[in-house]
Length: 343
Ligand SMILES: [Mn+2]
Image (tube, helix red, strand yellow):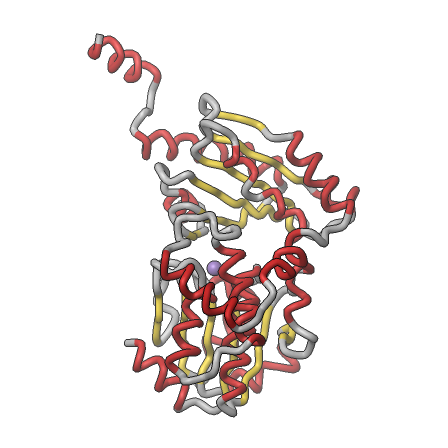
């Protein structure tokens, strides 16, 4: 399987790399490290994205490597490539405006990911669910392709792993992951400098939005579900981007007793981005799939058409219902019965 994908790379001359809409740290990083490795092999490679690089990851590229997709500029080129690689995509729907040009391209379509496959869009899949991040999977390809792992490839790779493990804290941070990171550090990258640039270079407005968002946290289901809602008004008042507001995404889950954390963010006019986080007892990907979204057991997301207020009103009761059915503590009367049975 791995060998097949490696020869697919070797036998392709023109290669397009892309990722999901609103690219995050792992998306950008896996693209950049694979792009640099393939360039080294003399391939004609372009990264085409729908959505800007989040500000904290802009230092990774001097510019020019990542292009914003536009139909006029890129559709002919996409149609003519030998290979199109989607990184960290989850579902092909998350290609956004690139969905149609990718679908009709004559190139072989490959998905490299650490999310479970939810569609049959691609010709080939290389899915590694145990990997902490897509960037960690790219490590394997760089070494199989015989490309020397140097600083310029290692730096984005480190950022991608750091992003998806939340600074090496999440379950995916295995000993294999640490071994890879150790090799990355040995190339001479400056880990402490990277952490500083990613986490400690935020605008004051961004931190103040964080503070207000945190102060508005709410609880449901006897404190087992927590959520934060950031509407258009708040985004506009602090003048931060939607991606910057995502600083709050993991906060609801940091409270003792909370099993599922929800984050409702006004993304576009009448569109809400909903992020779900779980401590592990509840599979939030299953909940997200019920609303057309997807993700992992611990972290999932979906797009809701409507305001954040509508999203909370509409989704919260359903999330509570699914939450209770998954945990099997459905109705107070049953809990009462269970108690008296024990007694
Ligand atoms: Mn990822």
